[in-house]
Image (cartoon, rainbow over all chains, first blue to last red; front, side, top):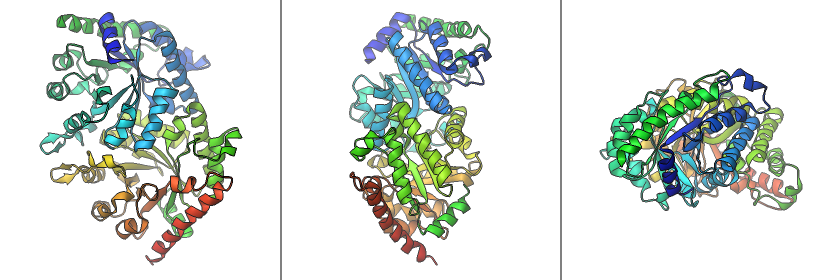
Length: 273
Length: 273
């Protein structure tokens, strides 16, 4: 999917919501455990109930790998279901990969070609030659960790290199990489006050923003500095939406929570025109 | 496996060789492609031929994920085969994972419990709370990226925070984390001159050293500064060993290459006593 297609979808749906599909078998409704593939059954119900309110879905690969082959199958079925039934949806493999060149190429093939995701999250620690193999895929997007939403972000990301925080150095440096137009960045919502300076470095890039909801981030604060003319934001909510209920009404409850966020987003988008 | 068990195995075999199982179907002998599971057939033959010369095996997960379910099954079979037939072998999932706390717990379960690896490689960018979930597993080891063997290492890892390189800051900081005795570190062989200063920060920790062979690193240089009384090194070679031949003699050729390295290691170990 091209960035323009994503932007047009956002404007059509008046939503820049991304729903995180972090499926934990201990948290889903008990009656689904009788299904042949409970993880996929859960995802399918959530997707069918929320696809008009969201523009993106983001399975975190950890939750699938934790169930071995069964989990990997559920991930394959989920992305296939999305691509076949809702091709207008932007898909994100939240995998936080990154390795030396030839190995990153294998990861890129795994997520872009074998599974068919539109994008994948990657970690910057190993530098340029660990990321460029991802960037060389056309109409695919590479979402680089910049400033994450957890406490550990203060261990290294906000430390200063030559008077400039590590995460800003990552943003600046990555702009010079080949095919950097295919880059997006992860910036946590729990650090809304940082968005102003981030927008000075990457004024137009899409930012994937986790941390709204369960982690305490606030949508309005993020939009205040993060929103661009072309929106430029994908706000993710996982637990706050998918675990809104663990009863038989779980999909409806998820849709209600998604709609609350979408309604706020609609106001933000309308305020731009 | 405990660190002491690993050390005693190293001393017994006079080897601190780790063999990287980075299987690419385009590079393995053609006759194996007829097998039901060519990746596992290749790994099994390599392991059977080299297990007396090596103390560790390290599948890089990228090479398995690139083949989807088929690849993940081959990974499961490989680790199961190692654990059942060669329980004295130290196993490393080269996965370079790392995510916010609850998600890192899922990755730790995937690699330590579901698959049964002794250790996993992780990236430090997200800080303490992304790594401690791995460290809490007893008799399991978490191998933190410090200084990698690729060019991109100079993009961020060797930049200075308060006059100290990022990778040294990572080493220093990680020592204060809970259960840090379960930490090992990745330090590339292509940067042998750095080992002296690294040993000042982590005098006793095990270092997993990629980059010998195909990437140009030199064993003698690494040992000069990296070797400790208890060895403290695992030197990895992947392509140089497993692709020594792509004919029917591939396993024997791999054993020959492994033995060359093991003989050098024997000299290094003997020089300690």
